[in-house]
Image 1 (cartoon, rainbow, N blue to C red):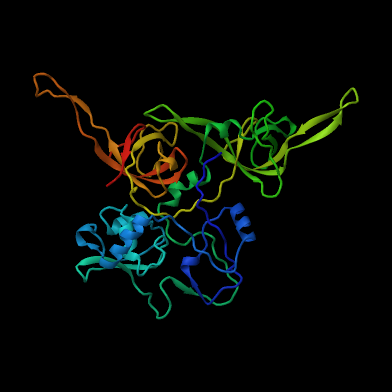
Image 2 (spheres, rainbow, N blue to C red):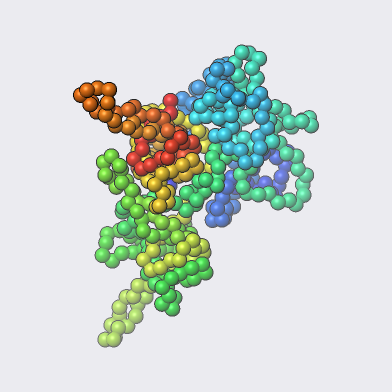
Length: 429
């Protein structure tokens, strides 16, 4: 199977038809792909549904304690502002780092917001945050909006025809531009899924290369292998597919184990007709069965496609808001690959694959410290010329934004020197 995160938006409100006079900004719609929107519209309810994000019991306990007492002033960032107005384009990571020395200490920031910002993961442009230090400790509060009544973040609308963007108005945890391709394009599959993935078997009029708007034919069943499922257009079966090729094995730098395959994204296709069979007469007049492949249309072509390229069902839309935090348990590992085959060293805002995933306890939002291996030297001050190894030093930070079973994608947030394959990462605390 293809590993995908199961946290997804579950519904889409029909608020565009029946809008109350006061519409809270915390109920603005989340991000959806075209197909996710279509599915969500069929299951929309009259009430607005909040998105659920993972918060551990330990984080809740810490937040509750901090909400009552605040945090020591010494834990604030040296240049923490007394007040700040959230702007469009801000990220939760940047705001957390603006107020705290260690931005991954989200439970403290969440606890500080517990009284005023009811959903700690959804902060909106225009909200005013200020530090209350009157008790000798720091508590972050949201200032009441100017203009009188109404709760912070409330927009008053009248019953009239209007257009609302489906884009989530709340600020994301990380810059969407940096990670969006890895939410909508990147694929990591296991060996079994790769070997049994549906594949393109033919094109119209003997074409060799396929591009946007072309029609092609595909099969999911394999005659010589166990497994493989025919492509079906029955209700409930996927009709939207990603097209990929040349799945590259990702090996654990320490053990050599193949942890998964990273596929090269080519584009998207839509299933028009499922696979079937037809009974025909052979030359001897006997009935024989012919295989009729499925029909697909190429919707998006990032690169030209060809016979042999494989298909994977389009995954659910990923959320962009999650809690930046350190893992509750000790996790360490190594960087497996750097996105871009010609890239030797990774810098800030580049994406890497790491050799830890959901099975190891990694979750979206986990922040890890990148370690630079200590250099091996000869001690020239010692007549014996003893070989020494300098201690490892912190080289930067990365945040996990998408997990699979054995691997994860992470964004490098800050770095002192170039990061290479094999570099270690550990808990930041």
